[in-house]
Image (cartoon, rainbow, N blue to C red; front, side, top):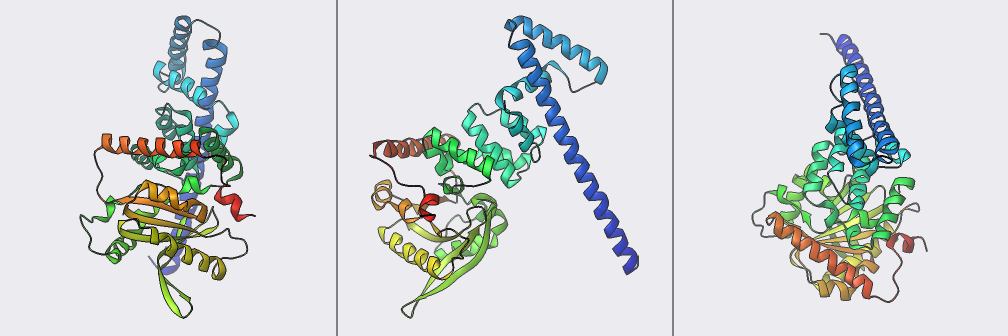
Length: 353
């Protein structure tokens, strides 16, 4: 095939692939809205008014008649899934927005989550980061919600953050940062230096970005900054598109030390002065370490300095141990918030003062 003919073939293939993708998305949207409409109609017209047993018999008869006319896809179980769908997502406009990215398979996976806040979290992150159904399952199984700072907040504040993301496409730092981060894909049973860890992260950048969030864009490794003729080096520098902030990441092989805060604060102030653009918010920092003391973290008030600290794990404990560890961290953080008299302004608000 000659050059011009090959180019023609590639152009036509792109047209076909684009049309098929568009048709698939249109069909998916129509199916999701149809399933929601069926579920909502049965819920409001039948199950909402009739006794449970009688309502179930009506669903069974509806299933039989629909299957007779349209074939498979309208079994009793399928109709009850549609009803559950309408119950879990009662706002048709939210469903309409989500269905632009989420398939019916995505929604079925979400319906298995009983907690509404957790379900809304995964739905919105799935929409924003365009997860496949496999990725969605992985995120749920890895307890992503429990690892975010959002899970440590009072429920009403967490709901506000999700509403802000859904309505204004604005993401708070509490939705972005996690603790711990799972770096099992690095293949490091043991490492002797922070440079080894840094090299492994960059080697596996394609796997690292989904773990920290797909809105992160890599900027630099060992970013040199100069203060009073003295050179310092930021381990990893990223930019977060939705936060519109530079994010400096420092890697620590051992436990977090109080001096680590001062080092990263210097880096963040230099970035704010020399690298921050007018349309950007104040840079943030993340210290990834092998371990940390909760009392140190609380006393140093890292969050007010725009610094997050998180443990990284290159080997995971069993699920029960991990789940217990995460729930203890959530309870501890919420207890600390409840014990404070008054509260500090969120990072996003501070940046606009």
